[in-house]
Amino acid sequence: MISPIFVGHGSPMMALQDTACTQFLLDYGSKLAPKAIVIFTAHWETEVLTISSTNDAYETIYDFRGFPDELFQLKYPAKGDIALAQSIAERFQAKGIPVQLDSTRGLDHGSWVPLLRMFPTPEVPVIQISVNPYLPPAEQYRIGEALRGLDQEDILIIGSGATVHNLRALNWDATEPDAWAVAFDDWLAANMQAKNLKALFNYAAEAPNAKMAVPRPEHFIPLYIAMGSGDPERPVEIIHRSYEVGSLSYLAVSF
Image (cartoon, rainbow, N blue to C red; front, side, top):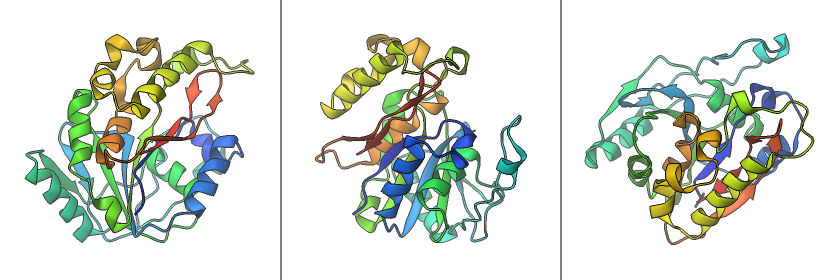
C-alpha cells in the first residue's frame, strides 16, 4: 500500500537546485516502489476532468520562461498506460464525474519536476490528470474519493501544487518564512489532522490569510483531491514543510 500525497512543486528550478524540499522528495521517493503514478497537476486546467491516455513516452513541456538554458535541456520521458487511464476514467464515470481522455499532451512542470526529484529515472507508467479550479473544495474532494483503493494496488496518487502560492507576495530578501504564510499552513495542518472537513471546505472564510495564500485556487485544489483519495481511517501526516522567498510553501502531506 502506498498512501496518496500532496507535494508543493514550487519553482521549476526545483529540477536543478539542492534544497530541503528536493532532498525530501528524493528520500521519500527512494522508499517507494509504485506500480504506477497518477498525478493531478495545477498546470493543466480544463473544464472537464481530462486524463492522459497514451502508451508512448511523454513530451517534456517547458511551460515557463526566463530560466537558465540548463533547465530546458532536462527531459522526463515517462510512459503512459492507456489501459490504466481507461480504468481510472471508468471510476470517475461510475461516480457521475464527467471525464475525457487526451492522447497528445506531454508532462508539464507541475508533473515532471517533482517526479524527476522523486524518481530520477522514470520506470513506471504515469497518468497525468487535469484540474478544474472553479469547482468547490467539496467537489475536488469527491474527485479524489473516486480513486480510493488505488493505494491498495500500489498506485501512487500525487496532488501537485502549493498550499501558499502568491507570486505577487514573494519576498526575495526573506531569510525566514513569512508569518502570514506559516499561519495559513498551521491552520491547514491542524484541520487536516483533525479531519475537520467542514472547516477545510470553507477555508476561504475560515483560514487566516486565505486570500493572500490562495489568490487563485489552481495550485491549492490538488490538496483536496489527494486528501479525498486517501483512506479516511488513516492519520494525516505532514511529511515535509519548508518555504522559499518568504511565502512559497513546500508543505507536503500524506493521506
